[in-house]
Image (tube, rainbow, N blue to C red; front, side, top):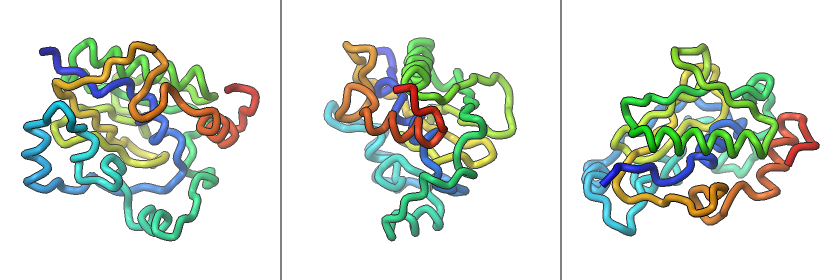
Length: 194
């Protein structure tokens, strides 16, 4: 069976691109039980629930955890927005099949058409970018702009959700909600799109 991504990664990229919470966090080491579970995913298991990260998929540092604990909104911190609304990303193609790379690219295009963010794929290290990787440690990412390379891990595994509707994304929605799009566009100062 072709190892496929869980689905289109638009929401995962949106979480990295949109959030303005500061992050210097590193992925937490996963438990032996979770690593074993990831190696033997069943038909009802989701890799993003077994990464050992906050809420399953977010790499947070202490400052971010404090924000979450105190229910403060860090989205307005301009220093945590991607400069000029441009998000650089790199896909480690060695971790994915060509079909999986296409799914990542589809997610990027969907997010770009619904927002004023511009995604630029880089083939070599840039100063600050999202590094899309596919290690067997679940699905997770840092949150917000960090000013350096940051991992977005999308664990490939046999079970897949291939959308019948090209706007479908991971989660309970068929795409970004109007509220998500409005918030994203407001943050980056382009109120007319979405």
